[in-house]
Length: 303
Image (cartoon, rainbow, N blue to C red; front, side, top):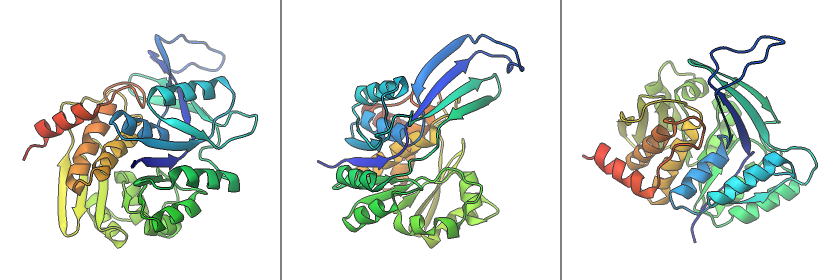
């Protein structure tokens, strides 16, 4: 059975809502609302894909702490069975306290960011990802696995996230290997050195025949061969919290790839899943199932 795989760190979000201001040193403020949720990143994308009915497999680091137990429960509830890459005694997750203010947010995070795999972790991930139709790529130590999967016919989708030192030179090994890359406007401008997002999209043709550049809330640029187009965002979705929007976009985008859709269809699916995600606080609070996804696409993007 075809499936989508990926390896990445698990993120936990502690969301504090209802503050009018930040507390000063020595002060204590009480918030009106609080929730504990799985955060964004690769796990969020795979969970949203599972919600769309696509089998997914994830390799991640989980411990015996209460946050890891919470994550295991949420993975299971959403139809994703995680394979553990961690055998230490610390807390291997990234844990973020998000203080949500009326017009902004502040974050405090514990963790080390990405996974730094040893040889056992590389072998474990390869074993679960072997045979996948699509594998999500992230920067870091899993490059040898991605290369093997590519040789075996797996489609590779790269998500870099932001980096102050982004450049073609720094990411060349990943860009040459990936079949798709989905940067946002800021990332595309930085990595290409272009002055605007359209020029950035064409600069990415150096690596990709099918180019994607997310233009924030406006929509998404696509270039398919010689065909340049722009797909507008879904106007009915009102932004409450943008956490996890890019991860959700990836789930819809890869849903399209998984089902052998055109690049434009993939972007339309991505706009729907990404747009729905911003309508509630948290990376995984608002989402669509397969039936809703297809209904919205037919209604919003009908030719």
